[in-house]
Image 1 (cartoon, one colour):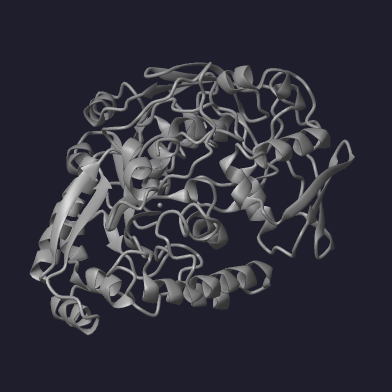
Image 2 (image 1 turned 60 degrees about the vertical axis):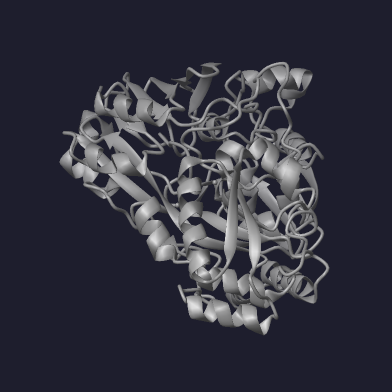
Amino acid sequence: MPHLKDITEHSSTRRSFFKLAGSVSAATAFAASIAACGSGSKGSSDAKADGAKAGEINKDGTITAGIAYDISTTFAPSQASGAGPLAANIHIFEGLYGLDPASRKRYNALATADPEKIDDTTYHVTLREGAKFHNGDPVKASDVVYTYGKFTDKSSLFAQFLYFIDSVNAVDDSTVEFKFNQPFSLFADRISLMQIMPESAEKDFEAFGAHPIGSGPYKFVSATKGDHIEFARFDEYNGPRPALAKAMNWSILSDAAARVTAIQSKRVQAVESVPYDNIAVLENTSGLSVESVQSFGLLFMMFNCEKEPFNKVEVRQALFYALDMDKVIKTALLGNAEPATSFLQKSHPDYVEASTVYTHDADKAKKLLKDAGVEDLTLTVRSTDHDWVVSCVQLIQESLKEAGIKATIEPTPSSSLYSDYVDTGNFDVLIAPGDPSVFGNDVDLLLSWWYRGDTWPTNRFRWSGTEQYKQLQEYMNAATTSSDPKAEWKKAFDLLSDNVPLYPLFHRKLPTAWDSETLVDFKPLPTTGISMLGVGTTK
């Protein structure tokens, strides 16, 4: 399915594009979705010391960047699912709370303080005094209520993450009341995904999606598909992260070679999604810093759990033990990933090692297959057709052969992979990338993407009828109502590692390059995209 393709698969070459105006597709389907250990000549902490100094910031300067993803969806926050618009929107819009794009830590944005707890299922949030939208209108509680309605509309993919909210009401112009249908301990972090839109957007919502109006530090100026996104400083912004440049110009550079050339020549000051095999070249370019930041973004293996013999847990485990992930990571990704030891990457604040950690053990794989009564296993592995994924799958095919498993690999464009094969049940094993952490970093959100609702458990890996699935839901629900949820998350991680209906093979590092001689306080991100919040330029 193409709607979330460019976020969730982080492709550097092939991708499907959508028209921005007149035919914007609402993200109504869910596709496999899109990070701090580093490798690079200079980490982000070195950039300021070795390059530009804070006192040299040119407040009338222009920041330039190259992004890897085109304008594939509307900019309207409740509908935006493309990586390009999502990256732009963190500069154009504000939520009540924000998650720092680099650290993933929460901060007050339009809200003046943490939510005020009225009772277990009622919270009040007070808005920042004097906050304005780019058209000059004040930000009011009624705008928050309107935005909530758009985010929970059936056409919004974000509705699935706001399931715990019963109603949102304006107490007065500056106070918003949230009523829950259950206690929910992660409210402040979760509500950060809801970027506030003015009520006036409803007059022509399609036009708003093409020319967005927010309350963030930068105003949208223009965008041309396949070419650029242009921003200007919002001089009336009074929030915590003002624009430090007069303008920003982002070049859309979908071609990986074009990004490398642009940053080498310093035509742009930063680029995301540096190809792994170009990291060394850029490290040796004068004035550039390169860093690969550990992400949640994963490559997962998923089974058709209704189909023999993949309905047997021993068979699913056997395939995981058969894989030499160290070899895959070293060869295909040049070391830019960590093998999965849990659902989360090790750098995540809620990480805990799972009860089962898969390492390369062909003999154990063979024994598990024998115990399951399976001989001469032959299967088809379908995958996305991105170059780096195909390289991984070819190495995976070799590992399976060593364990006596004959696998045919079928790389397929995502536009047809999900609709023609996965959603129809016409597959054995799927290997694909995913990363919903672009929407938020709390454990419930990351788990919910794949393990709540019908889209994945029922219609894709077809495991929702099992007792193990029901137990998983109990663990997840208990965690969201607990004041200390880590014990319940641990149970969920263990259950998933033991049953592996869909489970990560590795978590990737995301390489970013930037001009540390001209950008001040720039930090590479653990998700797809570029952030210039709090970043200045000497140019």
